[in-house]
Image (tube, helix red, strand yellow):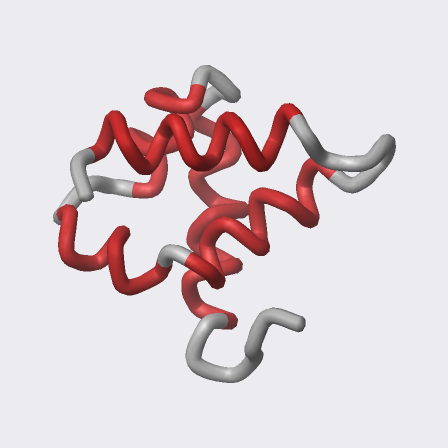
Length: 74
């Protein structure tokens, strides 16, 4: 998946997040798409910028991606 596609997926999840759960959706994005992120060779900051949410959220994507090997999505 390309950086722009990952950014689009993240933006959708972020925009549809229930009130007060936007950061949780960013973490969930990192969990769900950790393999795609790894394969894209894009940085977490690049994906956040592509989503239009600001590069500082790259850290939150990283947290989700690290959690991916320990958790599964309900």
